[in-house]
Amino acid sequence: MRYLLTIFFTFAISFQLYAQQLSGGDATVRVGELINSSDYITLSEELPALRAKVSKPILALADALVAHHEGRFEDSNKAIDMVNEYAPELGGEVILGMQNLSLINYLASENYKAGIEMVQVLLSLLPEGESADESRRQLESTLRWLTALSSKEAVVVERPKQDVAIPVEVRDLDDGKHLVVDVKVGDKTEEFIFDTGCGNSNIISAAAAERLGVEIVAEDIIISGVGEGVAKLGYLPEMHIGDVTIRNATFYVVDKLLPEGVEVEGLCEAALGTHIIRKMGEIRFERESSRFVLPAQESVAPKVRNLFFASQYYIWCNEGEEKIVMQFDTGNTKTRLSSKYYERFKARVNQDGGEVTRSRSAGFGGVELSDVLTLPEVEFVVGGQALCLKKVTVALPIQYEDGTPFIEPYDGVAGTDLFDAANVVTFDLKRLFFRIDK
Image (cartoon, rainbow, N blue to C red; front, side, top):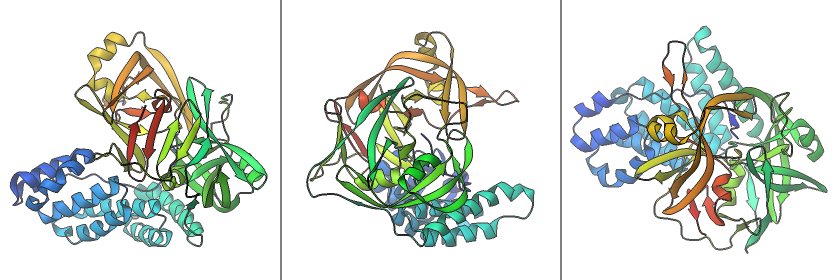
């Protein structure tokens, strides 16, 4: 599920003409094209061979973006400091976008005090008047979040120096499945969705937060899910998942995880977020034994990353010769393909997708309804291994009032069936890979 702190983020870079005018020739133009198209996967792959020929302003920008998408948040902010030195060449819009990116880096690395300073800078840059009201509202919410946590310690994950097994329930839910783990606080136990789509914090219902003794440290925090809503910010000094101890966990505390009137039998009242999952390191999911294993000795990571970070985590794979990029979100019970995917593969989807049906996707803040076609199966190649997913919906484009179609930026959302379609998978949000082992 998508649970994110909502922050002001305007990052529209358009410097293609500028890149062509710079000395450095084809290498600079190539890097500029990859940034303009937001293809940071290819940029990460090609930059080492190109960097000696790329102009310094564009190279600094590329370094900041690649480091961010590889989860190297401190390196990204160091590169952003370099980008700021090229403000005359890059322009104010790019510099503002990079300052917003710097804030996201501070949030992801839990450097809350530096984040406070950046929010204050961004607030000072907002124009007066109603046009900036929404950005000001979001930044002030972020400031409350950061201020409340600036006196707290960062999240710590402690574990024994041996293989650690964590029981997992693969729970049938709605039209798919959830991965569910037990979290213990003292003598209390609460079921949590294992949710790679929940960013910056965990999320929990007010009733479950009261059961576990979550301390409320801030109010009126704006977060986004399917829609947008307001949460409280909670803090828990210690909790346990099997033999793993988690200290200083933070929570979005909401009335309910789903909108009023939407009921899903078996849904948990809490979700474990990526700020903890990332620090757990390498995780192996063994479907037949229904468990996660945190190995004492990490395996060798693939040479090519197939996960990247962009406020959320994304996975790329192949379908035939085509690269497919989807949000990596185990809070979604099934993989769902987007209107972008539809536009790319329209002829095949129309041929194989059957009749148009109406699909509902519910989450915090609202319900999304979309017209979909359903493919009987889709085969993706993930890290060199084939993975077959069954009954995958593809969203049809919606239109703005002027008739212009709205096309989503990525090819869809990779849900829990990405795990359930294989016997053993291994992933690591820090080293950024997802691997099919069996």
